[in-house]
Image 1 (cartoon, rainbow, N blue to C red):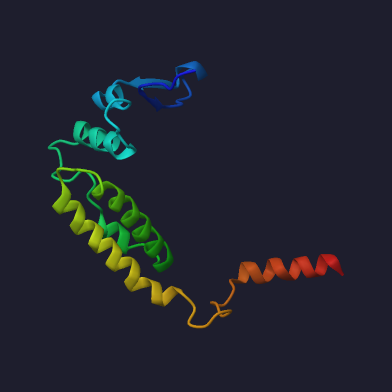
Image 2 (image 1 turned 45 degrees about the vertical axis):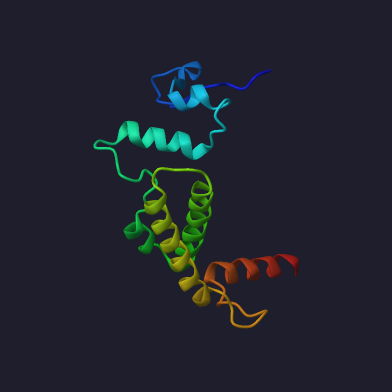
Length: 145
């Protein structure tokens, strides 16, 4: 059994039957994925370039305004994950190297600037548990008695 050489757009509107939910996207990238050692970001890049007009200078540009509006823990995790993704992109040849590198560095800086505020200072210490966890713990104890 071979792998499908095209991307499938999955949609499930109520008026369609279940066999109509996968629509093939015949992209040049999907036609060349086996012969050109392509990665997921190559597909993302092509989809962004095809669907945003005018095409952005960097299809992997990070929306730092949205990122910095997140709670601290989410912000640190997202920034770290984005830095890991951008690092993988940087390790391949890409025409947006300078722009991606700037976003990568900013993600790394953001991640490590937040980490001290969310990591306990001493082992075994943590933030106060939420009221939801306290209530669940109490119910669990009451159920055992």
